[in-house]
Image (tube, rainbow, N blue to C red; front, side, top):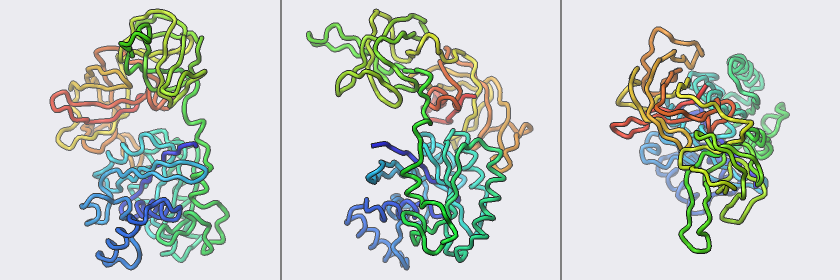
Length: 414
C-alpha cells in the first residue's frame, strides 16, 4: 500500500491539531481508551465539545496553552493509503520545528482561519514549503462555520493566496473550505457549502499522485555500511549497504564509485527478503559488485554516464536552528551530507530572506534563530551532490557545531 507523508502548517489557533484529530476520529483510527481520555480531558478543561486537538498535543505545556510546540507524528490508514502526519507548530519561534517536520513530506496542508485570512505565518510556511520542494500544497480555509460558510469570503482568500504564491515554486495547489471542528469537507462533503464542487480533504489525500516526486533518473546510492559476514557460508560476501537516494539499479548495470572513480558492474542486489531484479528510492539494499573495489562509508555508487556534482564549494539556502548562537561568518562547522561527514567553513553570507515579502535582505547578514539565508561554504573534502530541487536527499545537509555537537542549521544546496 502506497505511503503519503504530509505536514500541517499555519498560524496559531488555525486548527491544525483539531484537523488531524478530526481525520483520525472520522476514519475510526483511534482506540477507545484514547477517545475516552480525550473526552475526560475535554470535560476537565470545560470545553463544550470533545477537543480533538488533544489527540496530537501530547506535551503538558501544549495541553496547558492549547498550542503545538514540538512536531507530533501520527499514523493512520484507509483502505487506499497509509499516512504519516507531521503536526508542526504555528508560532514563529518554532519555525525550525516546521522545517524538520516538512523536510520529508510529500504534501503540505496550510490552514487559514477564514476570519483572519492570510497572515505572516501563512506566507512563512508557504515559502518554507516551496523551499523544501513540497510539490503538493492544500490551502485549507478552516473555520468556515464562523463566517456563515460564505463563498465570497472563501474566494477572496483564494485570490489573495494565489497572488502571493505566484512568486513561489509550488506545482500543484488545491483549495478546500472546511470546518475541522464540525467535520465539514474533512472526510465527508459538507451540506453547509453546496457551492463547493471539489472533493473533501481525505479523498484528495487518498488520490493525489506523488509517484513522480522522487527522482528515478539519477542513480545515487550513498554507502552507509560495508557488510562482511564472518560465517563460512558467506565468507566471500562483500555488500555495500545504504538507502537508495535516486534512480534505479539492476544487476548487470555499469556503476562508478565516488570519489575513487573506479568502475564495475552490479553482481546482485540483496535485501532481508531476498534478492531483487531492480531497486529504487526509497529502498534500503546491499549491492555486491563483480570487482574488488575499495569502498567505505561516505562513498557513493552512481552510473558512469550520470554523475552528481563533485565540489568543495557549496552554495546553499540554510535555516538556522540554534537559540544560543548565530551563524559565524568565517566559522567552522561539521557538515553532514548523506552518509558523508566533512568539515566546512563559511566563506560568504550572500543575503537573508524576508519570508513575508520574499525580498532579499543584503544590508543585515546576521543569521539567527529561525532565519533563512543564502550562504557559501568550503568543505575539507569534495561532496557528491545534486541541487535540492533535483534530489532532496543528495541536495540537503545539516550543520553541527563541532564544540557542542548541537545541530545548528539545515541546508538546501542550490
